[in-house]
Image (cartoon, rainbow, N blue to C red; front, side):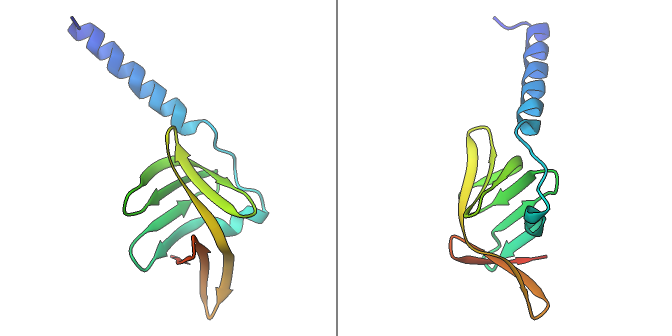
Length: 113
């Protein structure tokens, strides 16, 4: 049986564990990757937020990660937090055209806000 004290200790341990997991694995973006930093929004409301410190958020119709770690390679973008993650294929890297910056992930165009 859980006593009140054990329940408080368990809750505190879970909070500490989640904090450690959310901070682990973040690596600041390199100079070349900094073009990806910012909030990117698709026409359907899906968004990707990439932070300079290597953190990231993503919201799609079936995935939501807040405070995850961002991993960028030449052709993929992954934002994850523990077992929750979303990986995209970079089909067009960020480019500026007509005053707007866009990129395509999984062939969906995202505009930088």
